[in-house]
Every structure is written in structure tokens, then in C-alpha cells.
Amino acid sequence: MTATAPTVVGVDGSSTALDAVRWAAYDAKLHHSQLILVSSMCPPANALPPTGYYDALQEESERALAEASAVALHTDESPGLQLSTKVTPEPPIPALLEMSKSARMVVVGNRGIGRINRSLLGSVSSALASHTRCPLTVVRAWSANDSAGRRNVVVGTDGSAASLSALEMAFEQASGRGVDLTAVHAWADGDFTLMQSNQGLEPWGWSDVHSEADRVLAHSLENLREKYPHVRVRPVVVRDRPAHALLDHAQAAQLVVVGTHGRGGFVGMLLGSVSRKVILGATCPVMIVPR
Image 1: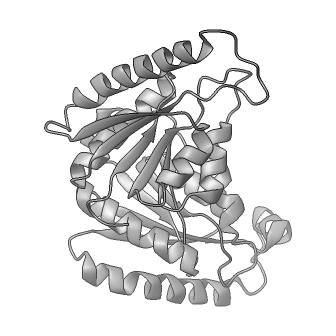
Image 2: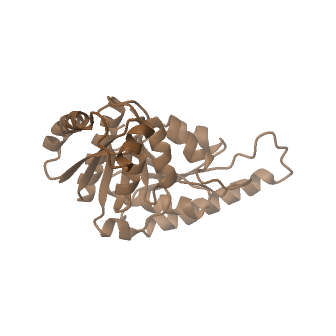
């Protein structure tokens, strides 16, 4: 992945895809990246299309791309944006995964039109989150006010290699957007520790764990603080489930960044399950950064 690699957006004519286009146009402009809008005209599996079906799919894909292009080009933050479109005969998941090998980022809505039914997290965004080769941003809803309001960037980190990649991307995003960064390290030793906390009891060994967590987080931030000295960082260590902690901080954020998966040094810090829960629960865009 390079700074000049393209930003790829999956387009299917849905309103969430248009939100993804708006976000991607803004982000691509910030990073001087070409924007590529991609639409699939692949029919359902095992279907026997009637005469003229592929022509209709082609027209539908071109219409969706034309609408998405107009949205991208009229985004206030993206004048002069380099834009291209692509209609692919492949299904959207393998097509976008292949493009993720050479893209700086892939962007999709949290769910698409859904020819069969709608789900809270679409099959495309779910599959890409598990297998993407470059950062993936899943957009539920976005408007220019989210960036104009100077809302911060939030990142989840546990000291693992996977979360360090997410941490570096979060610094880059906060730097480009000129906003603060909140780095969240959450720890919970299963339900029993949380039960103790809810009963007003001090969890066994929490003071030792808190000190170690502070040390791990400070070490993770050290080099990136030097690389991005103008980014103001708020380190947060909490006794809570990681997903719950991130979603709590995401309420006032314009972007949440997490790793795809990996285990840190503490029981309960599984970023694989966390990333999915954050995608499902966050109201702002969520960026998934592979190791």
C-alpha cells in the first residue's frame, strides 16, 4: 500500500453506498488518492437469467455509478478529485478483495440494497472485514458535518501487532483531519471481574494490571507520538469489555479504528470479535486495519 494507491468504493445504488462514497471522496482528497467506484453486475448464483437480463444489470450498474459519481464530485471537500468508475462481471466480494491487494483503502456501506433481505451487517462488508488486504472502512452514515465539527478519531489498541497497525493508521487519519486522537486500551478478565466491579468490589489484581496496561499503551504510542508530534493524544485505560469501551468513546467520534484480529497481553482482549461488534454498534464510520 502506498500513499498514491487508489481508494476503492463498492457501489450498489443503496443509500448506505452513497454515504460510503461521500466519506471516501473526502478521505481520498485528504490523502491525494484517486477514487475508484466499483459496481458488480453479477447475477445471483445458480440463476438462469432470462433474455436481456445482463443488459439490464449493466444499465443498473451504470446508473448506480453515475449517481455515485455525481455525489462524489459534488462533495464540498473534494474539488478536483480524480475519479473513475468500473463495472465488473465478478461478484462484489471477490472483486473488492482482489482490488484490496493494490488499494490504499476499500470503502463500503454497512449494508447494501439486499436483493433477498436486509441484515444489520451486509454480507459484503462482513466478508471484506474478515479477509481484506488493505484497510477497510465500513460506513453506516456520514455527512460533512462530522468532519466540520472537528470530532475526534478513536482507536482500540492492546499492544499486539494487529492493533499497532491500527494505531498507526489512526494517527495518520487524525493528522490528516487535524483532530485529536483517543487511544483506548480496555481490559476485562471475563464476566467475573465485571461482576465484582458492579458490586463495588475491587477486582483482584486490578491495580497491577492497570499499571501494566498503562505501560503497554505508553510504549505503543511512543514512536507514533514522535512521528506525529502535532496530534494531541488522549490515552485511556479502562476496566471494561473492549467493544463496549470503544463504542462508548465512539459516540463523540468521527471515525473508529480497530485491528482485524489478534490477542494482546491480557485475557479478554480479542480484537477479532471486537471489530465485528464495533462495526455493528458504532454510528460513525469504522476502519478495520489488517495486520
